[in-house]
Amino acid sequence: MIGRTRLAALACCVAAPLGLAGAVSSTSAAAPGIERIVTLGDSYSSGTGIHRNASDYDDHGPATQTFARSTRIGNSDCSRELDETPGPRLAAELGAASVFVACAGATIADISNQVDAARIPGDGSGTLVTMTIGGNDLRTVRGENWPDTLVRCITSAGCDASAKNQVANLARMRADLTEVYTTIGERFPGIAMRVLGYPRLMQSDRWCEGVTGFGRGEANWVDHQVDRLNAVIAVSIRSASLRTGADLAYVSVVEQFDNHGACRFWQRDRYVNDAVFGETLKRSRTANGDVRDHWDDGPLTISGASFHPSSKGYDAYLEALRASIAPTLTPSR
Image (cartoon, rainbow, N blue to C red):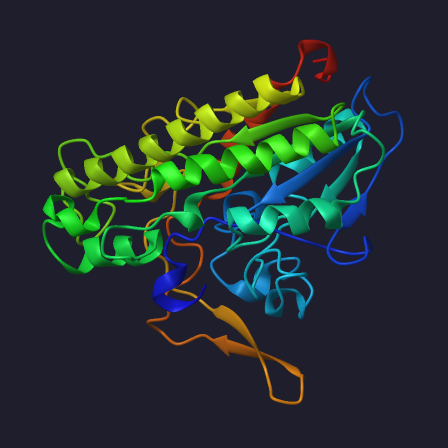
């Protein structure tokens, strides 16, 4: 997504040399039980938000992956950080390989391609998968996606009071998420998978000083929608775990992000960015099949980093992920 639609895209990442879209790095002496950590999902897994400008990211994914259903793993701009995100950092701590396939803009439907790109061996034993997914699938009664709804809240008063702005497809998402998680658990019964939730984006106090155009009521409404999404994700992963018997679990990050939303007055206190202006990238394909990169660095261009975790936010994600694995698998301190 780019411009307005980049405001709250929740997506992931990819890299080489795993065929379509996997980046692999490894060290020796992996911790018992974990040989590789696979990062799937959307922008909240890919590292979007760490940099203001698109050109500062390590990787944007294969140029052609976004143009066909068989290869799509997210946006044309994956905005991936291959070493500053939780999966690679935890892999380094445990001496395990890191396989990175997350990509900004990824939806539930893209996870199957991401799993294939990760090339998980055997029944999944020795593999820990981490992901965030679902935010890009949200749709309101009026049919808008979540990024456009946030833009509407910034540019108009009382967005929380409109019936047309309410999220309308959570039941459908619950079914789709359960199917995706169950498919992974059935295909890889030996896998460990940690599905990370989304942080409450705003976290207002008396006001929402950190986000222009947002009042307390609107900020609280946005956070309530995030809570509703997280509840659906948690129920879906629990259902898939019961169906398959695999080690599939939901990991909340609400505690780690508590009191550090975009509404905080001081930027140093925010684990979630407010609206950010910066360079963006979008790819297109010409009639003869060539892929072109389109860079926009205008003074009012809205960066994909908007309403995504800052570096401190990804530290908080790492803390939650680390705490979610068995104590025997964590590094000694």
